[in-house]
Length: 345
View 1 (tube, rainbow, N blue to C red):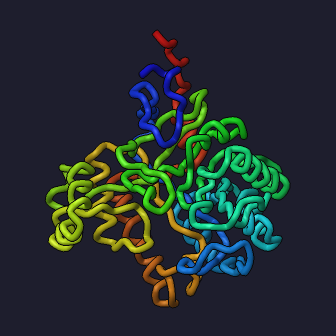
View 2: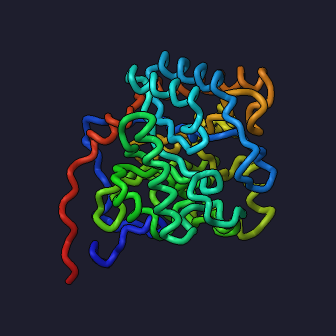
View 3: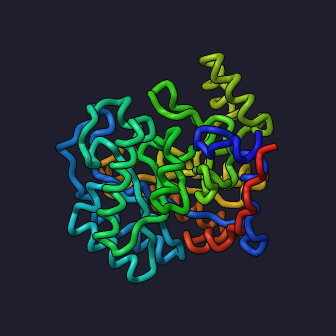
């Protein structure tokens, strides 16, 4: 397949020439993206109403922690958070201080225009009609620009819900980076995208190849980890076998997040991803986790203490391995100018 024959669809495997070799001076680095969103009951049906943005104190505490650790998070932010005067003022101060970056995060059920039926299938914005996805994306970009004085250049779809039109629409909207691809996960059984087989390393995407994809980081740990995704898929197809392999510490799939992942698992997957020569470890979590009672991961104050203990341990391990924090600007500066696409034969 030639570069011109490949439309840059985020659901398709990139071509070899689309893979990005970062500036060697950049080295091995890590980044943090925070899915900054309203609070809602994760077990309840989707709803346009009944949401709050009350985790602001938790977000302020989290930002202070990361700033002190020399980490500049990218807060990919959705419409209800941007609509909050208090949240927008707080985040605007972080931008002014040079302590954080703001990107876009699209939850279609709470993002205007409200034209689609609210349902599980329609919670993946990339699978809505192209005109609806475009309109919702533009409404979010305009609101962010109104609040912060600039359009966002980094994006993550809510529920990782990019679809066949998403990369082209993101290019058209002026985005430089997408981080929606959750490599090694398959959401097709829930009406969503299938990211199996996609790379862990950054690559060019979109029809014009002006959009950079920086996938979320997920690795395999256990004695069979070198068998990788193929072995994991085979185990999943055999039902209980996958759970048995995980319990026996033979093979587990581990995303880089403090949400539901132990310190020991996270350290093991950091080492596994470095063994794979992944240049950027892409951490993520949801902003409501920063305040007790909003997500399954931090229900109590004791859970919040454990959340920060997790980060203390992980940051210590990263420092020991020589993996430094990178800001959005650091990463973009390390991406070389892409050569022009080859013409079709």
